[in-house]
Length: 325
Image (cartoon, rainbow, N blue to C red; front, top):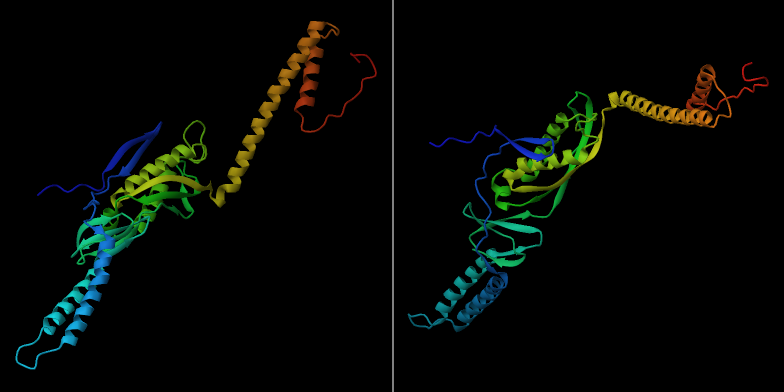
């Protein structure tokens, strides 16, 4: 007996620089899509329309001819029989006329066995003994609910995404899973949770959900595509629609971000102030219009830095005496 595939194995696929995909290996689909045998619906419709009319005409003609008074029936009896059979057969042929709209397909089954798919839009005629299931092949999107998960660093975050997808194999979508739409929804949320727990919300130098959203959503698209491939669905793209810290830590993280912004601004101010002081001292020394000893240079540097780096406007103190008083 051949060994069954282990559905718990994972496949490792490269999805981009620094990104590795660890997605489950889904079981192989039992069927694959193939075209169904069919003819133009116009011919089938003509047969289905003219057949009952011709059969009804034969029935009425047979009744009009009637029977001979003797033991043998007249020509009316065969007309009635042929007319009845033609009417029933033509009405039964109506079951073979299928209308396929653009963006839709018809999955055809014969006594439960899959025989093919109709994708050509318009009227088509197939075996009247078959049954058909309509399935949409239009591009659709699914937006997940806002999920609360812990990122790679253990911080609770809220995340949501939108997935753009389309049915690619109608046979797999119909027979491989119970409900392919529900399957896409469940697998999308599962993949989103896995991605959210694999990366930190923010990081210095490493990949993070906030700073590398485009690269990470590419990995999300690939993982969802692998998960829903068994259902005959392909993923077009994915994007984050919501990404934030959970409310219980949002205020603390906001304070940390504000503190980081203040520190960065202060660092920029100090760097600029030092450059301005250095330029001022260099020009005074080069032009030599004021002689400053080391103590006065230090005082001048201190005063300039206070003026340039202070939060408020300085209050000048005028010296009415000499420079050393």
